[in-house]
Image (cartoon, rainbow, N blue to C red; front, top):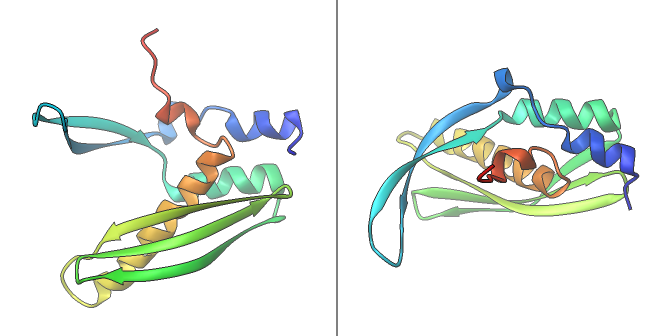
Length: 133
């Protein structure tokens, strides 16, 4: 179990200048209506910096599985080990045109998996938790 001070350091909100936004289409399955959402995120390097600040170099990330799905997407199962805790998550990315884009898609999928594992440790949760006040 992680100490309270470690948990506080992991979950400390990121300053605004590190937060990025991207647009994403979202379809309500009940109504079929589609709208565009603006999603907050931080770059993978920011997540890695937080892990280094809290754990030094006493953390690791391992790719447990990877898979190319058709010609369109790659999927990675990663495991983040830090502070005596292991968190696993799938990351995915679309493949663009050209063979070099397969490598870039795997890199993006690994970054996605790192972010999702780190979220389970509390890193960046404030970006996903939205309240009305």
